[in-house]
Image 1 (spheres, rainbow, N blue to C red):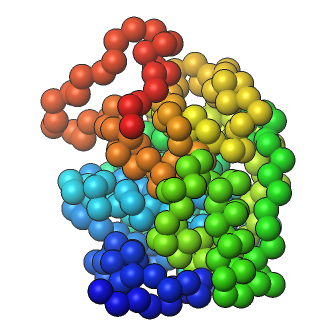
Image 2: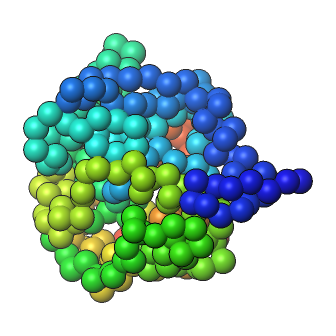
Length: 311
């Protein structure tokens, strides 16, 4: 097995990046209007639609360890949000309302008439998903938030290394440091694929989402969302580290009906670091597609809803 240079400049085995290359090759690419250009979507699988919105400074690649499983019996639509990945900047100021309006317009074009999706958002994508569900309820039948912020709770001060002025091994080291500080709790999980995704995403990011993280924007949107809401956090989510229980409580103040799962030992990028546990949590949180027998749900009150999914 040979070695090749990743986009970060690191020599990696062919097998390390194979999952990403296979996903890219298998995707059906679609575009919808966005500003002066297009919003790019990638689709896999067939079945009831499941829409994935990535995190800040990200792209559809944030879901690289989830798409193959989720698309086994669903149509997965993974977006590049406006101003990120391959998508153009929105025409107006890049506020959550403006970005979500572009997303909602895309869903209207991509979803079959009369069909609503299960909408999942990670971090900044959770904020955009909430605004989208509030603005376009006819297109959304459930909302699930991963690593959500913008609930008016404290956010840990996380110092990130500058990357764009670095090259080679120094650049790879900076990416590794940033992933450890912000995204992934277990350093052993920062592999060549995670570094490749981080490098590609950072090179293509133009929209800055960090200022929205300490607002109450997500909570305000959730108050207007008429569909079931679920939430997943990693137990070691760095941005939520000052008070993860307080973040859960803030969510419940707005949506007492929200169903919550905490993944033990995992960080902010929980879907990458602990994909099996996230898939199990989604299996519990997502409503059954029409015509399926209902799945067994955990019994009990608040304790059952906030159980820690086993890794």
